[in-house]
Length: 283
Image 1 (cartoon, rainbow, N blue to C red):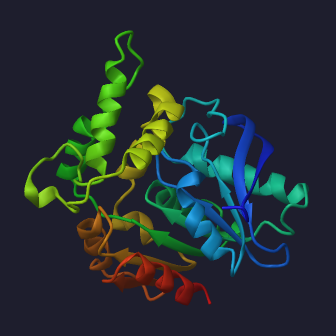
Image 2: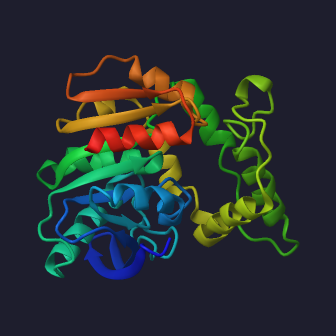
C-alpha cells in the first residue's frame, strides 16, 4: 500500500480535542472522497479500496474517534451525533490546513461508517456532495434488542487474560456467522476459515479500541432503519453485495422503496465484481 500516506490532524470541537489519524491517497486536483470505516476497525480495513478509489478521487480516510490511531471522544454523549460533529470539524481543519481546497466532499461509508455518513449528510447537507454506501442494513426492533444484549461482550481487561480469549473467539466467528454468537446454519455466510494473520489483525483492532470498542458500533446498529436513510436528500448509491456478512439485511433495506435519488446496486459476483461496480458508480 505504498501509495497511501498517513497523517495526523489536530481537531477541536465541543466533543473532541485531540488528533485524528487519517490515510490519504490520490492526486490533489481530484474531487475529495471521505471514506469512513466499520467499527471497531480503522481506516486500515479500507486500504485496498482506498487505492481503488484514488483512481477517481483524492481519498481521505480518517480513523473515527476512539478507533485506530485517533484520540477518543472527550464527551460522554452517546449516539452518532458526536462522530458527525468531529467529522465536520475534521473537514474544516483539513480545509484550513489546505489539505483539501473546499469542505464539500463525497462520502463513502461502510457499516458503522455508512450510518455516520447518513447522519453527517442529514446534519451538514452543505458539506455532502454525494453518498456511496456499503453494508447499510435494516434491523427490526426485536433483532436490535437481541444484538444489544448479546453482540457486545464486556472486553474490559482481566488479570487472567480471559478478555483476549473472548476477543479471539468472537473475531473468529465474525468471519463465518452473523450475528457472530448465532451458531445455527441459517446464520452462516461463509465456510472459509479465517487465516491466523487476518484474525490477529482483527483482534488488534479490538484491543486498540479497548473497553469502549462498542460505542460507535452500538450507535450505528440502533440507526439501521429505513426512516433514517429516507431523510437523506443528496444523490446516494448503495451497493448490496451477496458476499457481505449482512447481505439479507441489506436486501431488506433495498426493498423498502426510497425516492429516486437513493439507488441500490445489486452485486451477485465475487470481490472483483463488487470493486468493478464501485468504479462504475463513481465514473
